[in-house]
Length: 457
Image (cartoon, rainbow, N blue to C red; front, side, top):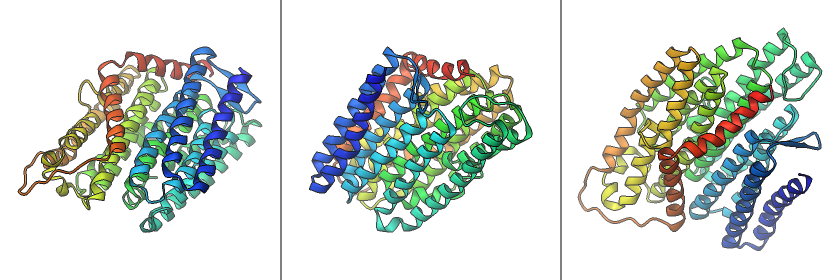
């Protein structure tokens, strides 16, 4: 067990140092190769660790367990796809790659954390480089400043919450502590702090501006990877530390409803494609909260499945947006004639958006089915009904870009798609369709991850 941990640590060091070394040489293709090799090997080692060893703790700092391994593999795969998009569409891929490697280390620290301090350090390690990732584009100064403001508030709230947990229990471990008023207040602060990280209403006020103001591949990272990091922290803290606080989960249920309605209703009025997807991402956070509010293994399984589904869907859609922006097209009306210009792009966008609606035989359908089923089984029928209503509302704004893409226009010209984007879209479509049509294998893995949380209580 110690050996496999050292192998993982060495691969992480290779990822960071390899990126730094190749960046100094200025070899863009070599840097992408370093990322593919390092992240591929990290994914293999993490997968092998989950199969061969299950769960164990090293140095009282890192907890190797099914839950953490699920998120670590998801972060690795998602960040690799974002790297490929950045390779195609970034003017500063070398700098992006170095910064993204530190972001990934922060994500590993959070997902494999064994204490609240580890979560704090991991979130900082991921957030600070992300500020500079956004800044790589000169036009994204405002977006970077707004992201910095949100991150600063989140970290301040999180710091206070951790101090209160230590004051109320004399411990910083991610385990249940005695119930008292201080701990109750700490649970609310955790929800607020991580609400900024996960785009939960009303803590998402700056999220659409950040997403719209960033380069599309960066937005793919923010919504497809960084946002999932916030949920990785939120779920394990609420279940492992505060599962006995029913009032905290009532707050989560209320925030779920507000987040779904806010995201979906405001998305109806958007004309900018990236901004519409930002509000769509906010509504998805509301769906994910349904599973957390149930405090059940099935609910957490549904939340984790929806997190997996949305990561690949969002990255794929933002890859298409990056390609469109390269051709000076950013609004929904600019999609008119897309099918005639590039049929694969129109098909990919349509499929991924329909998966967000909940099209059968896609991961979006399976995730929502598990979430609504868990709500019904937990006696939260109203929450399930409101979730279904929001899914119906979302049909209206997803239909607009789809209809535009299949509306013909005069003087259509063929638009070529970069190889990197094709690879990313094929991977996202495969994940969406394969695990939507044959979800059992993934559901079993995720059920094992969620079961760990409840066994550890």
